Length: 312
Image (cartoon, rainbow, N blue to C red):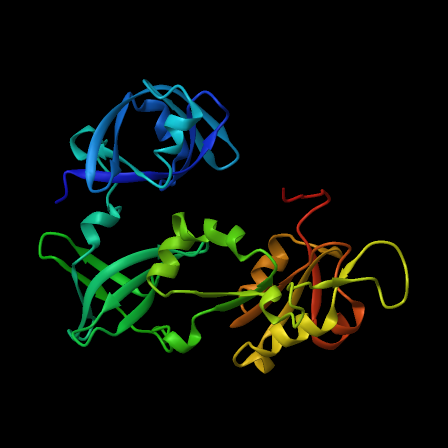
């Protein structure tokens, strides 16, 4: 067994006095209250840090480490993983396991057929997904639910599963996202934390499309005055439509336009969208997008909230 356990990832800084924002990997977010020190893994090296202060903000943990007193010092820890020594952790309840102890175990069906080795476990929010790789390198995705995961035998290094109808999630079933945007660099955050791991394991696919690449103007201009008149500038319909047409299998995709005028995003809407196999997300800018192209390609308008964001 590994000496250390991952309990979170530093995803950003917080404030100007060296505090960091941590995405916890634990069901019990308050476990950080009990910690006096942790190890931070960066470039395959674990270094011990003393915890001076722990706060909580929504579902994130805010930590101040001794010796990290400036935002510039905290920046150096971004994307690093926080570890604890296994010997310092409290015993788990029966039937509960650390993910690190499950990785690499052989996975058999309840008919004693070897499926492969457990390569990863990915959390979708509703349940875990067990990623099993067979001898040919093909991934088999199994939902981590009691009807499927029947037995975990750490001592004998094996997991017994029951295959339901369509239990294995074929790669063709993986959710695909195409994002039409003027600022694809703003989506670098997707490389971090849980979404980053999902992308790395190809459990989801995200394709960023720069709308500006489809401008025929020598200066790559994409905005113009509204066709029907009015104040401000809108994104031209031709560049949006050409960007949309570059998407493979777009005929089967649901197109979402992110707009202040749209229906406010909530959990019910998220769950409904999670059932889609292919989403195209169109990101607005300026005063919006020319209505003619919206009428032609958009299925639904959604707002993420009542506030204004600006990009400097």
